[in-house]
Length: 256
Image (cartoon, rainbow, N blue to C red; front, side, top):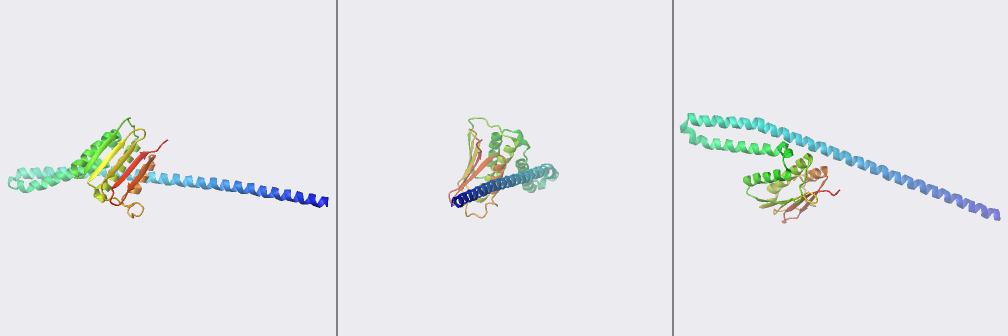
C-alpha cells in the first residue's frame, strides 16, 4: 500500500513537471511569437515610411522640374511675346489701344507663372529663414485673393529648421491653404506659429467644415498627404472640423 501511494506521488510530481515544462515552452513560444510579430510590424512600418519618403522626394523633384520648366521655358516665351506686342504697338500706333488688353493679359499671365514657379521652387525656401519666408508667402497670397488671411507669431525662441522640415512644412501650409480656398468657402484664415517649447503651426478657417468620420473626400482633399508629410519629419497632424464650424489643422513637433 505504501509503495502504491509513493508511486502515485511520483506520478503526480512527474505529471506536474510535464505540465510546468509545457507551460514554460508555451510561454517561450508566445513571447517569441510576439517578438517576431513585433519585428515584422516594425519592418513593415519602416518599409511604409521609406516608401512614403521616396514618394515625397519624387514629388518634390517633380515640382522642382516643373518650376524650372515654367521659369525657363514658359516664362521666357511669354516675355518674348510681350516684347513682340510692344514692338507691334510702336510700329502700328493705330492698333495700340486694341493690343493693350492682350499685352496686359500676357503680363498678368507672366506674373502668375513666375509666382507659381516660385511656389514650386524650394531653393529659396531652404536658404531663407522659414518664418520670414512664410510671412512673405502670406503677403503674396493677400495680394491675389479676397479672403482675409491673418498671421500670428509667437517666436519666444528662435527655431532652427532643417531643410527637410522647411520643405515639408511649407508643402503642408500650401495644401491646407489650398483646401481652405477651394473647399471650405472660408472668408477668413488664421495662421498661428508658435516656436517655443516645440514648433507648432495652427491653420484655422471659418468655412463650412466637414465631418471627418463620414467625409469620403478626405484623400482628395490632401489630408492624408498632410498627415504623411508631418510624420516624415517627426511631427503630428491633428485635424479638427465639424459641419458648419470651420476647420483647424495643428501641425506640431513631437516631444523627445
